[in-house]
Image (tube, rainbow, N blue to C red; front, side, top):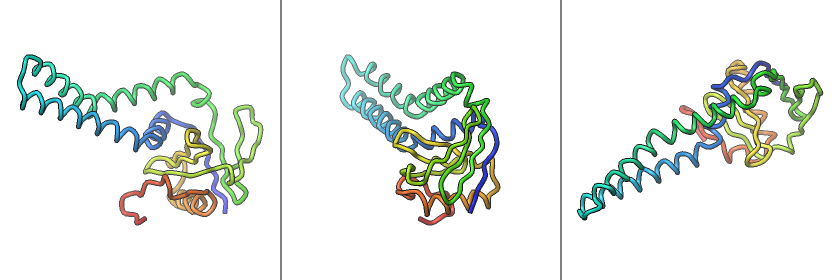
Length: 177
């Protein structure tokens, strides 16, 4: 079974990959900020003192940070990284997924093969697949560059060939575990 993915990365692919990679950690951090903000606001209203206004304002700021600013800052940072690496934007994506592994070419046109044993896990959401070489090094495969049938073939290949295939996989709506 072979799946060929050709195309060009776009910013939305890059952003979706970073969001998927950091999904759990970002959510936990945001929830912690909102909870601590709510605790501060509650404390300021239950135990009024000379610092109540300051505590309440700090709590409201933490809640706003957790709900809005954290996400905005994350997108800003990803956009800044995207702008700093033009080779990522300019180099065409040309990957072939087969029984041996992942075959591709680098920006100089040199061919290479990474065997399936090099990959430790994978994740997916509605926009991208992430194929991990290590916990912090991944390959993003945008789903917009393939037909749904090809995405299903790729998913089946990952399930059978990649160790820890379900560890980091997020179940999509309508699927069962």
